Amino acid sequence: MITQTSLTSPFRAIRQFFDLMFRRPPRTQLAALCYRLSDNGPEVLLITSRNTKRLIIPKGWPMAKLSARKTAKREAYEEAGIIGKVAKEPIGEFPSSKGLGNGFKVKTNVIVFPLAVEEQINEFPEMGQRELLWMPLDRAIDSCQEEGLRHLLKSEAVNSLLMDPKTPA
Image 1 (tube, rainbow, N blue to C red):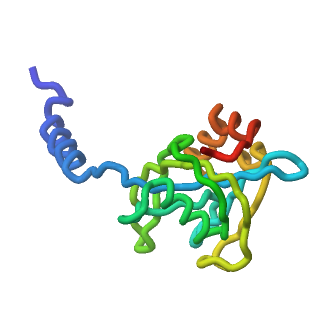
Image 2 (cartoon, one colour):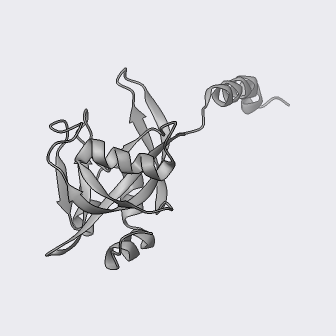
């Protein structure tokens, strides 16, 4: 007895084969969750992406001669003029995608390091290309459009960090 599903199964098998052949694992990006204590309590920094103007955190590709945490620290400086102490261990990670400018998107896994802000300078490499917005955690959660980042911001790890914002070790 031949069923309709058995007639399409060779095509399904071929499609699954090609899907697996051309699927690539997510590429890694490194990010800084910049935070500070203001008169109104703890705040986090969100910045706009250059092209889509989505609210994100400073992030970028790994750099050959820098550790993951130092790369995150450098991205915070380049994209937002942030100087501070970065934690030795990440606070979490989330899935994302990175537009490549040619219409293609690459799946990424963003590893996030907390960065206690000591200073924010006015002149930095990407000055004028992004908007910088300091806000309380609850407003940051409501403002960011990226589901993975929103989930990280809602995490117990981030909440604990901001409720006891000591400088990271």
